[in-house]
Length: 464
Image (cartoon, rainbow, N blue to C red):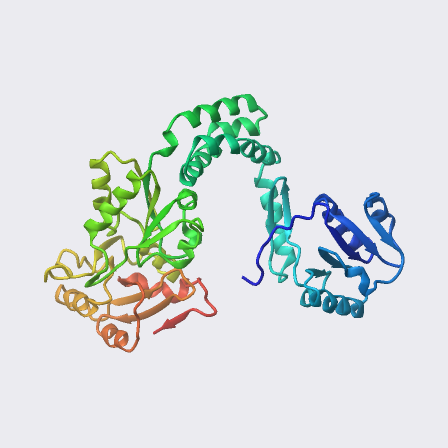
């Protein structure tokens, strides 16, 4: 982050506003909404700003002096004089007083975000000064999405605080209660102005223990790009107490979890099982039985070579509630971001997904797995076994000139693509030092890659 977002309590604090034109008036409007007391210093004052001042505020009709900075919580400089701004910034920094200089970000120690005001809910959107227009656009979208009376809901929840604290001993219990409450009919009742119904529901929920039961959400994290998560996946991820994740989950997706959620890495690599599958299964069970909201985050889709079914069986046996949120499987994500359609009327009428890892010396592909020339073959986790994959395909009758693509870190800015044929791909791959998640695509559809490639096209590294 270029800036740390903070919320200032300016009630009864004095803020120095240097300048008294229309721009200063806009800043003053915002400051007065935050209950600040203003000290305005300027040779002249516009009528708009004059009407904003209350008896508690001061207007000093002269140029600013060093003594004006004493005792001020914040300083806003809104003149047209760069020299004054430079001097003010230096004086403010020497006194450790935060200062905002309008339209001169290099002189600012803080900047104003675009604000969505649903008091007491306040949302600030900042582009770190890079694109205020974009920040305002995002604010408009949030304004349209967020009900105007959301502040009523915040005040209603706040009114329950003492009662909830007395009834529920632990922070975890209280958080679970509030999370259940704000997603319940009580919240809808408040937003519709029916606080009596909301109060009754809140009291009933406090007496019951429905909110205390743990559960598990098995979520497909997709191939890496966080924008490919479903809305449901995002919602469940942000309410989770604990997130168990594996090697194939991108950091960008993991960062969407609640900041105070516990993160447990249970990743595996071929021949390097950091955590046994049975241990993962029992960890999910134990955490849920503690009353925690648990997310098991798996790369791609949890039911496609993700062993998701194995992890849920133990939960089902112990009557632990669970749900499954599908994700975009790696094959679909990698192919789409590489501009390679998995099926195409002119090249492939079907697609086949197979795992590429070896298990107890079993051949990486059976003859049935190899498919036909008019079928696209997708091999998951096959980079280590590439030589075996190619050999098996050639033995099955695939032509040496059959196109093949290796896609690493699919859908991420670090995505790399290696294009070749069955006869040369192993040699090409040996020249690369790849260790990221890699998918293998085999088939005639790869010929469309150059024509249909779209993702990050100016900088995408394509090796041919």
